[in-house]
Length: 313
Image 1 (cartoon, rainbow, N blue to C red):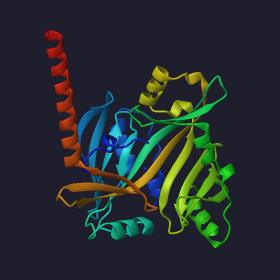
Image 2 (tube, rainbow, N blue to C red; image 1 turned 30 degrees about the vertical axis):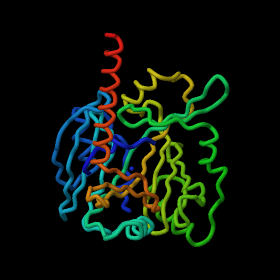
Image 3 (tube, rainbow, N blue to C red; image 1 turned 90 degrees about the horizontal axis):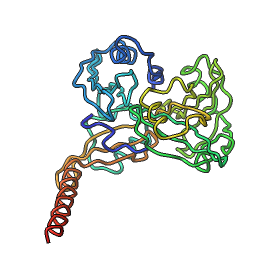
């Protein structure tokens, strides 16, 4: 990945791809997290830096067959994002995503990366009997707040139960990913006609929801977790900003996207990120962003100079 996801992010098909629980703290949580995630791959540490006061390690991952990717893991062993090492361009890309890439852009990208991103959701009640969902990244940045109305739209009670042959196929995939969990129901989603939401209960009674496609592609996963399982940076951010006594539920939320590079009309390289269902998540033009930052800084400096001149008058 050419640049950290946190430069732009506002709101992460094999069984290993779903095992993204944060490892428990030990002598070296970073090494353990990387080993657990990539047990048979070569891991090279690229650099260690800080985001929001949390040490973050960037690593390059290379598999035995030559596939490579990158990962960003905090000092506590939580992944900000992690890549699925893969080879080839469009080979194995989810069909709707591939249709977007080939139908929207000229040419076929030679290199398409696959990433998972992790966020933590905290449902918080207020004295007015309202509920809000707070979205944090693993380094404690508050990324978004959803209202109860927005939360209700995503509840399974508002969805239609799925039926037909595709349900058996989806349940089969879910059983492979979650062999110890009970499947409660399968629902239709507005993600895409080929994607279904599976509602499950883990053996310890926690709720799990995942969205899978009929060709065994994973769109997202959400796990109910205990409050004590929140990363330390998220807990500290909660303590600083909100009344933690009113926490109702806590979840770890992971979603997936593809990333590739294209050239725009000016010849600048742009980074395009596409969800498995074909939705464009984000387009990033580094040159345009740098020019915008320089222009903003120039305006700020001009404003400061004007204030100084006015004071001297």
